[in-house]
Image (cartoon, one colour):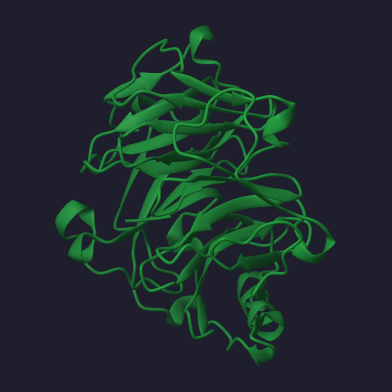
Amino acid sequence: MASAWLRKLIAFGATAILVSCGQNAAVSPPSGGATGSQAVPAGARGCPDAHCIVVANGERSDHQRSGLLFFAQNARGDAPPVFEIVGSKTKLKQVAGVAVDSQGDLYVANGNPRSIEVFADGARGNVAPIRSIAGSATKLGQTEGLAIDGQGYLYAANENSDSIVVYAPNANGNAAPVRVISGNRTGLKYPWGLGFDSSGNLYASNRSSVTVYAPAANGDVKPLRRISGPNTKLDSSAGLAVDDSGQVYDVGQANEQILVYAPGADGDASPVRVISVAGGPEGIAVDGRQRIYVNRVGYDDPPDIAVIAAGGSAHGIGGTATRLHWPIGILVR
């Protein structure tokens, strides 16, 4: 009998449908299980050719530890991470979003206590963060998504206060945000994922909309654009990404779908692609080849990472060796 994880992969391959330009094409089934290739030895920055899939790995139960897992981009099946950041010194517990700056330093949203922990490029194992943003002045709430703009400013989405707080480069300690996007005009409602386009515009995924803000937006500011309405199919976003061409990717928890919108989409715009991702999607990333990476927490099944190529083929990373517990944030570097 197939394992629960393998059954989920088979179901993913059977139900994932790519919709583009009026054409429907079935995504081929992912390969999985113990037959998947193993991660290759670590190279520059810990992964082959300086490229990693970085996952913020939460806790499914008290005896499991939060941390960061690093997988080679060619990992598939039951591939172990090439290395990890986990342990008591890391301060990581109840992790959420993850981001990387131009120096390669990693930023992790932490839920207990509420903080953003920063780890040096090349950090691994049970290592202390080089900086920690925490305290009453920070205005951190239930922080989900993180993003860093081209000038090094750090953005954090506070789901519980309908706000985005912005910190100066190299912010540390009980640092007050230099800007706060919040108020009725912003359209923020349970913001989760954050991203930027090549012009520096900020994108935020909300419960049932995607809002877009000008660079350096501040206060109770109206978005430049707002994707919202029944044709958008948006429902309970669990992550957002923007690719190099300006396409917007939103992953929904309720509909278990990846919704892709054309560059410049606004109003009640229909997605140009719809991809089903059953299994509790939570977090999304897109690389330079438009490959999509989605965490799936699994709920009653073991968790995994679904990897979907631009052409529609797909595979999974999952199994005991991966050490995935409750994957939330994800990025590709």
